[in-house]
Length: 241
Image (cartoon, rainbow, N blue to C red):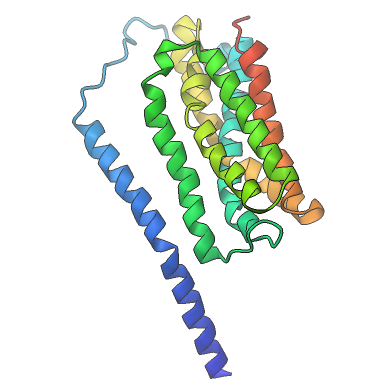
């Protein structure tokens, strides 16, 4: 009995040690970014003269309400794909990898999101924000659909590539949602920030669904989230009180 317990503890320890390097790499990138930002002179927001407003008064703007849902679904989809990716890659019909080996591919997913975000800053100001969001939302839907209905390495790489689509969604949704709010901009921004709670809610919904219809099929939750962003980029972002 003690021998079996010892073997299990050793196996668990070695498995945990195997997933450490990818996260150390990500942590290193975060530190570098933090150092760069700490030495960058960021512009101050001109809030002087704005009349204090209540959060509820900002909600009269339809595009802000729809944008808040956009943030909710975007963050939820981003987190749920990343959260279930290890289990997805571990499926026999996908790659059948154990957690230690699958963790490397999860690092690629989050790394793609980070790298894409930096690259996106270079061209987002040159193109229409709504069209950029539409493009990445459609691509995300296509990639998640491939993950849903295919198998093997194709399905795995399709979901990993979704990270690149996620990379510029936040800087697209946010400005579209607060456009034209005037003195309500600060309140509207606060509402949008609170909607990151989607990152806790959407994975829970997918988890419950995965228990009933299967893990691979449960990624339909992420598909629906990205489909909403297509609606927001085409119609929902247009200012209307």
